[in-house]
Length: 422
Image 1 (spheres, rainbow, N blue to C red):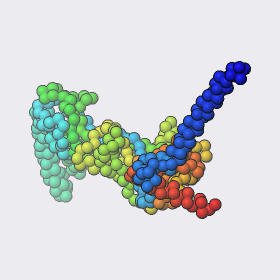
Image 2: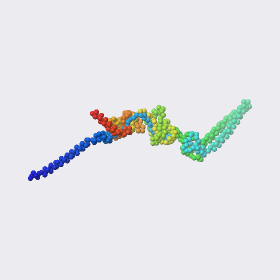
Image 3: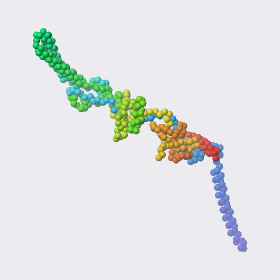
Image 4: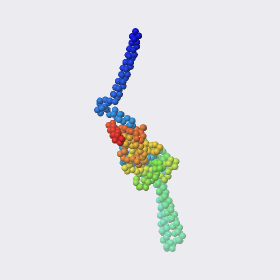
């Protein structure tokens, strides 16, 4: 009886052990299956038919995507940039030289006039009358002089015949001299009166463009008026006065000593559109100590009237041209406390830090004076995680996208070379 009572207990224990064995077996089977599928590639992948983006992410794990540019060499124009103000070569305010009524205005506002062209007229009648008076006085005095000269000739013959006193002859000669002086003064008065008549006709003293009329017809004008009649500005040719930093003075003087013309371009306020082409005319004889700049003057033909007096312009002066200069994009240049450097993309898809010496800059190009060769490739984008020896994934070369297979093949070549080395 005691043996039969123990059977249920043994049976329960047996069922419990069997249950845990089954559970453990299932766990082992699932783990083995997971490991198998994780290590075995899909059929299409084993045949090399995996999409390029999946293969690229697997092969280039840990690399930094970058863009690169090829280092080139070509002629590089060197420019100096400054700010300038257009200044008329000559500006003249036309003022009356005599008093009178302005009876006629012969110009239109904004008109281009030539030197000597009639601009306006002042009532000339007063000056005509004065001219007539002095001309009449001249005729009278010339007649008196003529009569005195005839008397002198007669007295001289009588003196030779000893028929007249010598004193009388000398007195007559003095009278002739006196009348000659009067005639000379009369002629001067006639010329002065003619000049006053000419002043009644206001003409253009220079060729140029007239501005707005400052006084209207019918007004009484005076020689003492401060405003004048109109302002004439010479626009062809025209000049621009601009400034450059004093550290550029020596290079400018050196270029001037070569006796070669220095070309200058005037740009608009935004510095984008060229307005006129000219040449350097002169430089100032001293540097402004308050600003550390030197003034220069350029002259432009301005045949299309694109420049106006007092206009603000940007100046670009062509100083020289560097022949066969090595150049890189400005985006490739990096700076740290040791100076300028670039990242060089190497054939094994790693980067090298290269210290360089830079030269002039123009637009988005920088001249490199040393420690860089043509056809090398410099990184222009993707610097965030780069350092010497970093692996890179080149996505663009010279602004052209790079296929994924290019980098994959490069990685394979790099790995193969490492295996050969080991």
